[in-house]
Image (cartoon, rainbow, N blue to C red):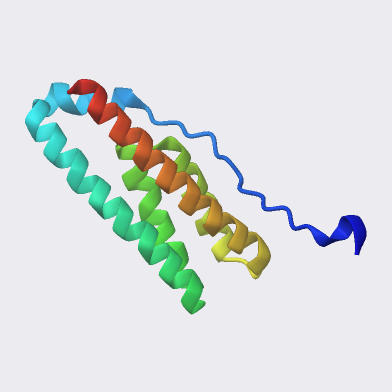
Length: 129
């Protein structure tokens, strides 16, 4: 077979931006312990919405996918997860079109960005400890 018989696996790497100023503002306004409670409750909701985006994609429920992605934009912005908010906005926009290939790529990107952002958020929480 020659040179064509090997398979190359490609895993995209995303640049993640978490705006720590949002979290600092929350801590200043509500106190550190209350801010932590709010932040972690919001993160749980973001995880649930990311899961709902994937489920809607797999089920072909594009209206629900757009609705959940739009709700993810606002919540992510409030938590300073700017990259998640941007990609979720793209998912919501493309979900309203008939471009399934672009939507598949964006949903996969949203999952990667979501996972990376949650990891980065956790790293910020550990810095405080």
